[in-house]
Image (tube, rainbow, N blue to C red):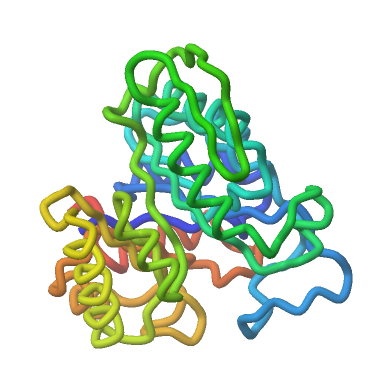
Length: 283
């Protein structure tokens, strides 16, 4: 059973210790989401508000650093808002984590929801879905053997080399987060879905929907990973007991992401160890 940790709500000065401890205890992966800012008065769509003090580090800088302090555990974005960046810059950041980790990196992407973040980055929020689709196509091409030339609606790249290429072939896995039809269709075009579900039945319906899109795109025989993120108010809360995880695993879900310290920025390190014992990691 592959269980990863959502580390966005860890204190900044505990992230390295938490990563090392998680690897020692048998966690499969570390997932770091992002916000570039959360202004005063921000109302997060989910309740209760899932973020405490804003100790938010750049996701690629952090994962590159954790790559050097770990050797086995996978490192992942969960999620990163690629449309806040220029695609070639994003490709260099993705490549850096993949190379520095020796090929232990997964890229989960999404669109975000906060207009102030897009305004602060100088990016049009209303075209973020189209931009993300084009970015993924361009980044994928940059990571393939040989030179790249690209001319899209939003981005253009003259013929250029782009080296080194990723350690993982053909590139790090592209997973897509989100619950909308557009997000699930986007996931079906790539390598996996990073989603939340209210029950195993909900998960089964979402997986069936994505499978139908994969058949539509002729990708039903390509590798695909489903990652479920547990959350407050969901089945078992942020860190469900093993029996609930097993209900989801029986559906064929590949990996699970938990937050045993309940987004409160406190007690993360002891809870990482306690939860590993509770669900039998390493046994």
